[in-house]
Length: 189
Image 1: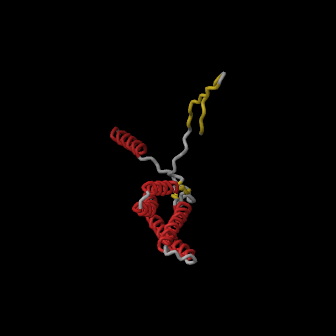
Image 2: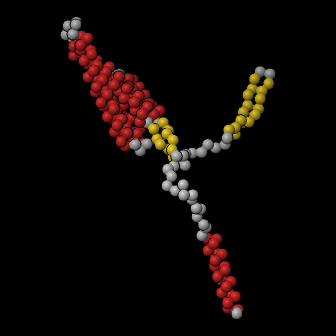
Image 3: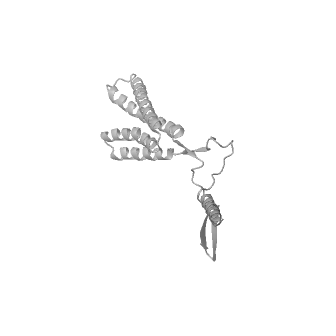
């Protein structure tokens, strides 16, 4: 009899130990199983604009013929690099395609427009004028490519489940004015 009570007590304690170490998994409702997680779009085009702005500023600050090559390479590769850093490899190559395609199309169109406008006055400087037309055209083409890039390609899809939650905050405030002042607390939640 004593051995049966001991065995029952060991079985009871063992089952309690199992219940404590193996918590039950919460059951999901059938409608939630396999449901897509809601996402929202986050624009990172400002990073591409910063890269384009700094490369343009650097190219114009040097003001030499070699700086135009640096400017063009930095514009073409800079936007793509921003996409690649965000994990969008295809968008990076699409950005390069936009820059090269619209830049070359702008160069050709600019050279043609400038050349056709110079045919009326034959002063022998058609090549120089066509070069300046091509430079103006490539600038316009790269500008249009940049606008398309930041407006259509520069977005991340962020899961609402992993998005950072806004936290409550409090901060002291103080305002001094002639004849008095104010001390308070501001916050948001």
